[in-house]
Length: 275
Image 1 (cartoon, rainbow, N blue to C red):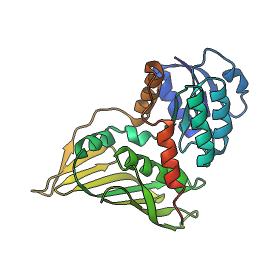
Image 2 (cartoon, rainbow, N blue to C red):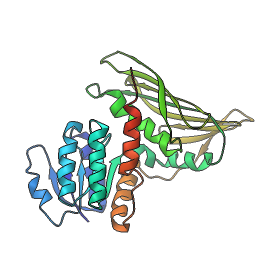
Image 3 (cartoon, rainbow, N blue to C red):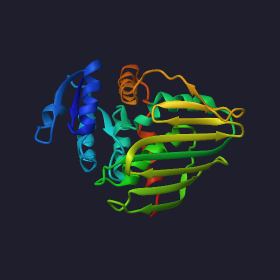
């Protein structure tokens, strides 16, 4: 499959490395490239967009209008109205449109989803410590990942009801959010992007025991010994899995996991977050 990659920043460079393993990248573009050449090239089936978020809508719209499948960096656009326009356009043209919520492709998250199926979940705690990026809004660019994980785990009717933020470097570096859902589960997210420690943790507590994912490792909580027993996971990166899913969705004519409807649902949740 021949594809085009628009945007060669940090995330675009990561996508380029993964795409080069499975596809022919016919175009790699920066801000100075004439995109019309890409959109008019019939060889290009799909366009991967990793430019600044404020540019996503126009680039994605033109790509879809040109008949290209679109893989868009999260959270998609700057507002849900524009994202919904792209969703509808993709459906009208019968094109695949995905937003890259790569954590839903993490083998640890997938295993947790499998393990908690049909069980009563008492609480879910998500915690993310990292340094930066301070120019981006933490809710739009970080909390969206936590919401995507929660929705992937089966919490469909999410609604934020309590949020606090604190300033460290920028206006929203410490963000704590509580969510309500259709299930009687306590859900909270804590984001600290002013931490020198890089740590992403998901803790799921059941009536008995539970699971903890710490960065790329998954553990079950042994209720007898209070120890953490490691669960082996396949050696698959979330980025490669999300790309593979999108490309195979095109080939097999099915919806990708992180499809446009899923992305729109995530966006409508984070738009409800009030400081």
